[in-house]
Image (cartoon, rainbow, N blue to C red; front, side, top):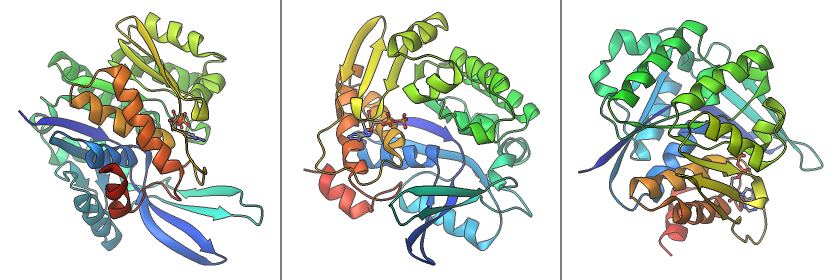
Length: 310
Ligand code: ADP
């Protein structure tokens, strides 16, 4: 039977500077990027559903169409009145250094839980094979909406859905490190698969090695973990068995935006096809290696397909 993954998060309008005062407009956001790469790379049919809220304006319509073009299911993209998607701008200075500026404080995605309770049905989400969310999904919600989301995840877990969490720590989205630590610990306790970056844990939990993260997640009962460390590759552990994957050899690293997101997409595509974790990490590293050779979060679809079918 066709598998189904529900992926909850925010997709924003991306403005990428081409030259001084000229920008390319796209759509991106951590969970959305992962959804796109999962759908593009899955070799068995998988229903990928993006769970979010957008507005009722023209740019929101455009965003929904962009999701549809990726063959990602939009039935859990709810509409909130009077608000718009968040936006961010990527500027590159004369030395090639990138900086990000965000306008997301009042973005539609923050209202996803309210929209879901008014417009959605529990049965639309229950029964999925996997449910994916990130630390950014958690960061943009109010305390009460976050509680409602944790309740929903509890129900999904009870019904047998596998829960996947990537902390993707963004300090600017949290009022304090302590509260973030408590929220992420709760998320990890619900997770069957955790996909943190070593850098996230260095800052947030003061873990300096992969082994420390592994011990911490084992204590929280996480069965499957993939700890990402940029160009040093990943270390994983599944049911007590350790494994590792080197980063893919790339000709030239152009832009590491969405390296982790694309890695997650490839990994989950492989896992949904019942490929074991030790092999899924290699599949994912090949995909992420391609993404870092290109500019922007989401590489042109035709270009990606030519590479992936090789
Ligand atoms: P995250 O941002 O989630 O911490 P990472 O930066 O660790 O993710 O990157 C995830 C994966 O992307 C790595 O395991 C590797 O496969 C690939 N990757 C990241 N940076 C590079 C790089 N410089 N060269 C080759 N592959 C890379």
